[in-house]
Length: 267
Image (cartoon, rainbow, N blue to C red; front, side, top):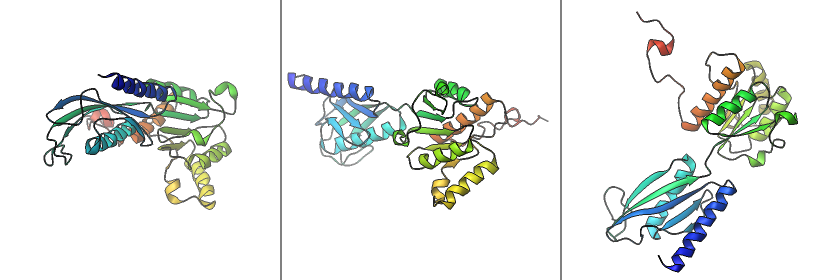
């Protein structure tokens, strides 16, 4: 590796380090294998940010365009992958190029840890925070009582498309006010505690104030899956289970149809 290439790599890795410190979502793509003719060489690196900007290179052209697209997909999914590309016009993984070679690129996302924003740090918020940390969420708790919170008041501007919002305060007025702000964010999950009557009244208020049906359809209320438990920790588990379903695209249905799973006695 030339001195110029070494400096470029050092700058790129420094950019990755800074992005991690800022908790920005990025992906590092590294060429790990090359066969035949290719503009890429092993060790070439590309740093791709969630906004689509990038630094470095993996050979340019159609190859680099595809790597950037796959890196953005990795940022969204949070899953690393080994991608294979054929620099040919036809065939599996073909990029419509004439070089004829093959390139393997390892794409690793960073900063994709999901955030669980809990609005209400009371008897449900505590066990929910503990469970979510075990699963791997960065947990943030907001509460009007400072001793039950770990961050400043609710700020909708900090919510991203990897922030899951749970409204479980002890005051329906606070829940409604916070919900109005949360619906203006890209949060993939917004859940609100309460009975069918309470949540229905809150949604009616928003509907009367001009919130669209598609906005209200985003709200999981009453919150959580119906697991049957009624203790705080059991309700917290039901809430987290629903969030995990949304996050991973699950159905929440049993994976087994055995009698033990569905609560029926065997004949």
